[in-house]
Each structure stands twice: as structure tokens, then as C-alpha cells.
Amino acid sequence: MCNRFGQIVAIGFAALFAVSIARADTAPVTPMPVGAALTTTIVALDSAVFDAYNRCDLEAFGRYIAPDIEFYHDKGGLTRGRAKLVESIKNAICGKLRRELVAGSLEVYPVKDFGAVEIGTHRFCDLSTGRCDAVARFIHLWEYSNGSWQITRVISYDHHALGA
Image (tube, rainbow, N blue to C red; front, side, top):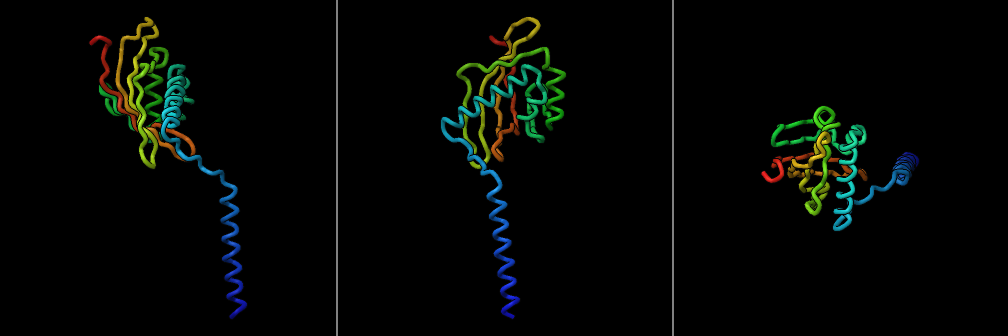
């Protein structure tokens, strides 16, 4: 009986040891930035995602987009899924428009245990004319998971011509 109990205890300790070694081998998850660091992070992400958008680097753009994204557009309706969103950017934006963030318009707010909300205004420039006379507001919901960020929801609204 004692021998059997000793085997069970030994197996239990071996299992705990194996779990502790497995945990030691996994990289620690970087905590989500807070305060000014969160704003700096979201500003950098906005710049990176729209640099890819403007260059029509759809592979890079897609890395910032969650697979199950929901994109709500006041003029175009709802687009669901990364593949459909990337395809719509390819067809409607690439080679036609450039996006510019309106300076001073960006606001960033933390979402507890999730990520951040980014709110701002951007304008769109027609590449054929060089005119930047279309403007809209946007809300991006960014999710922070396993040390990386992706946009999970977008609301793009109030699209209008400048001065209208």
C-alpha cells in the first residue's frame, strides 16, 4: 500500500515539474500598455495599417485585421470577415485613394481586459486629381491578444465632401 502511494506522489510531482518546465519555456505575454504608452501604441498602429492601405500592401494590411472583423460603413453597409474587407479595399481603394489622418483628431481610450478604442477623423485624397476633399469619422476597436493588436470592429461614418 505504501509503495503504491509513493508511486502516485512521485507521478504527481513529475507532472507538476513537467508543467513548470513547459511554462518556463513559453515567453511571457507583454502586458497591454496604459496611459500615454497606449496612445503612442495606437497612433503607431494607425500609421502602420494605413501605410499598408495606402501602398495597397494587402498582405501587411490584412495582418492588422481580425479574421472576424465587422466593418460598418454609412454609405457601403456592413462587410464581415478579413477576406471580404481586403477584397473590397483591393477593388475600391487601391490605386484610387489615399487616406490621411486629420492632425489632432485622434482619441484613444482603453477597454478593460480587451484593448482600445480609437476615434478620429480622416480625409481621402483622389490619386488621379490629388485633391483631398472627402472626409469621414471613424471608430476602430483594437483587440490586444498574445502581445499583438488587431482591429476587430470599424465604424466609418459621416462621409462627406469638405465644406459640405
